[in-house]
Image 1: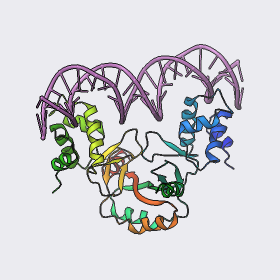
Image 2 (image 1 turned 30 degrees about the vertical axis):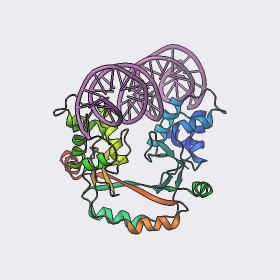
Image 3 (image 1 turned 180 degrees about the vertical axis):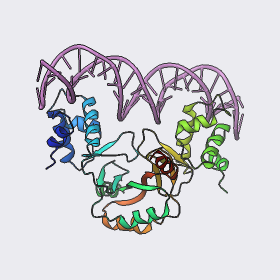
Image 4 (image 1 turned 90 degrees about the vertical axis):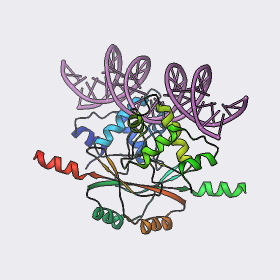
Length: 142
Length: 142
DNA sequence: CTCGTTGCAAACACTTTGCACTAAT
DNA sequence: ATTAGTGCAAAGTGTTTGCAACGAG
């Protein structure tokens, strides 16, 4: 099977605690963290780890197809260990980014494929709105 | 009517040659330029204009709803004077960004609206692929 | 004349790079 | 033992800010 360990080794990369830790953060969260968020999350456990290592590692993981990069319109990129293309939704009030699950975009993609002279290779869908938590907060204010 | 001049004035902004020039670049192109591209385009005509002015101006135009910002996954943002939400397609070989015209996303958006607890306010669709020019180039190489 | 705007340079935020030291194989 | 990876600091991008000189109203 293709565990992260095997995958790294097969491609000639060394398996280090840092790399495993960074990948684990991504696998075990649904928050689509940025490099800095990953860094902060690991700070208590790996106090000597540097941000540069996070950046170098997510780049390797991306090359290996283990993570994908997102940009919802912020200054920084976010990372997602779910590499299958799926739409994301971003709260314009608090900035959280969620997966949109159970959405079938096949028809929509097909209609684009038919309409463009490009040879399609992928896509990224970002939705924006107010998350349930922020809706509640808004109601309380009024 | 709502010319750029009127709009600026009504909102208490002054109408300067720089602002008009920047908006004109955006209205007259389909290339979705970044701030730097706008700056370079205006360099011959406004040799003293600074990049900072471009950034300040596109921000004002965005507030006024005259341009929208895009991020196709590059380090920099791009700007589009067509503010109606419409999908974009980006060539992964040469980096050009085109509008996808005549695509109806209403059904797709509706399906997302039904599936998320978020209160939807907008969306951004990015497609990736190889543009016709780059397809030709690739064929010539083989 | 007045106040917002420009252009410059400095400051910022995010990311990348160079390199000596360290650790995985 | 060999070679790649880490952590640090410095350098690189893209963008924003502070401020004196300027120009639109």
